[in-house]
Image (cartoon, rainbow, N blue to C red; front, side):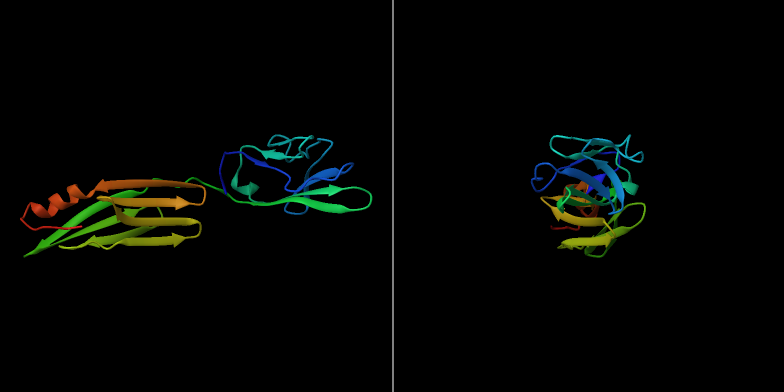
Length: 186
């Protein structure tokens, strides 16, 4: 997993036999390069090929670069696969927003936390004596998590390539309920 606009170096995973040519392909049918170093026109500005190590470096990755990359060592007698990578190029996640609200009634206080992004949200509650431990929602490659750790409420938004979070100290939350003389314990 890599981020949009980043780079990745794909190395051969097995030693290539001597006196072979190495060919990198994209999604099994598009040749990127052969070991003579000539890149195909679609990859000319976005790839570098090392003729000594046979590694392929892809630059300025875009989501359309997601796919299967394979390197084959070829000679007159045989073809041997020496590398295979499934690459996923993802956008970085957005920073989530953490909102808090509270509702008081005689003897109790309920605090509601909402962790949200542009596309989805999760909610958890703290009641007079305790808080729900963890709430999560998964959508495709994205995970939104809301939990309490070391006196902080943490809202974490992640995918396999990046993460962002928003936090709030529990002492600020406790003050919402203490204003009316009601206690909240975590």
